[in-house]
Image 1: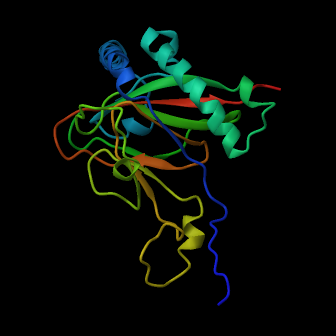
Image 2 (image 1 turned 180 degrees about the horizontal axis):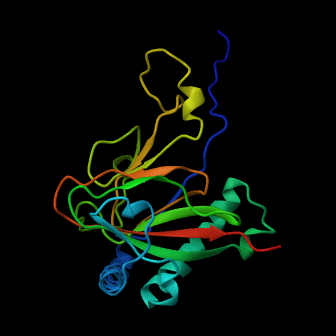
Length: 228
């Protein structure tokens, strides 16, 4: 019997970090500061503002609120080893900076974010942090990847959906599938308090609409390479 092997090739890198219970107080302050900013400023007219049920702050919230600067520093600490693992040179990673944090709030049923990607020019990666999840969880230190990072286009409110960059090419394969993981399928993230998701700037993503009257909070950012 010959040895049969299976090896995935051309993967897209994805990083995630669960900050757990240690971020509970920070999360409360982030939400409070986002609500304050929304009362004081109209914000920017971008991906979350293509509907009347969502709001986006201007970029650079880390220069206005201490909570955002604390979060920025935390992201800066964890993104470097993830970038190194993805193949970015060790000569570059010490100088990479997380910048341009902005807040997103979906305010009501019908709010969503259309498909988009992050940054331009010197942006390597982007990401999203959740100061609040879709459901409340008592023990944030206990994280189960299989419940929050799912293969396929998930069913549910406020999910982060990430699209395979080669989706169009892979869909040329016409056959019955047990799984689309290697055939252009999406990946869905169920928001959870204290969860940080990190992905390369080219990755197209969106947020599914809320169907209930509630609020969904998230914070986005750019991870920039140094100007050489």
